Image (cartoon, rainbow, N blue to C red; front, side, top):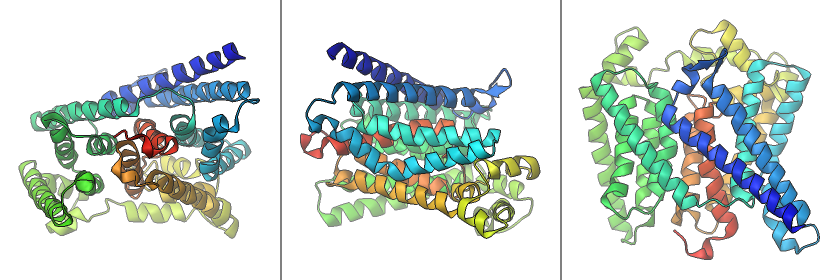
Length: 409
């Protein structure tokens, strides 16, 4: 039985570290993973498929470990079973989406379902399985990697070198920013990283990501030993300095002019910045797919929204709103399962003063970023976002499960 357990442990750890390797590669390639084609499919699709395969192998390894422990103390089985309980709404969502895809096959639905599998299984593996991963090491790596990529992104923008997709870069940068804000900042490099990443997000011109990045910066002071008034003062200074940086960046790069061109009409700065870029009319088209009460309750099927957008709406192959996508595909049932599952994850991350510790804080900030970006984009189906994101969220759940009394940062 000992050899059986060791085999399961090797499979679990090898598969998990292979998944981590994919996350790192996607951090480097960014949205180029979507544009690089191999045999007619994008590299991002291969990354998503491989990611799910590795997660299933990791899950198999964990099942082997659990089977080898059936006659041992129930304490050794507590974490995996608690993980299943915590993730039960999201597991139900994945089952519901799978059944819909079996009933009505769509290639877009397969991509959406794989991303959902990453969200659910990844949370379980990194949060509750017997995997040997050092959360502090992983988050430090993601912070440093995001800073390097951010500096390259800013340089490319000022040199007018085409490589990055601005909005997609901003989404994935928020994952690294969450790690940079949460980890201990013991030297000038780790202190500078969050601000350098924030500057790159501003340079991207993504309004939603910029707002979320600014909120993240305010969490830097949440572990400060200073008085309440000093912390408030620091946050006010951060807001003012960030506002100045945003204004100077928009002026230097003429980002308002760029948005005016995208809008196709002149207007005030406020009108340009608040313009939906056609989202409102597109959202009405997607919601219009719900023709009957049954459609509203259970949706039109996994991938239904993306299938319609790809065929009928230029620039809107997906709704640019994950809540509308889930409503159209899986109805109110799917949307409620997503909401309840996300709330339970947040509660788990925040228990026992979770914001005072690096991994749960980073996981919370990533969840906040995903929720915010889901209002105007599609982070939950984008492999280059959801794969790195679930690593950070899972590690936050892992620290919460192990207990915060360990004294680790």
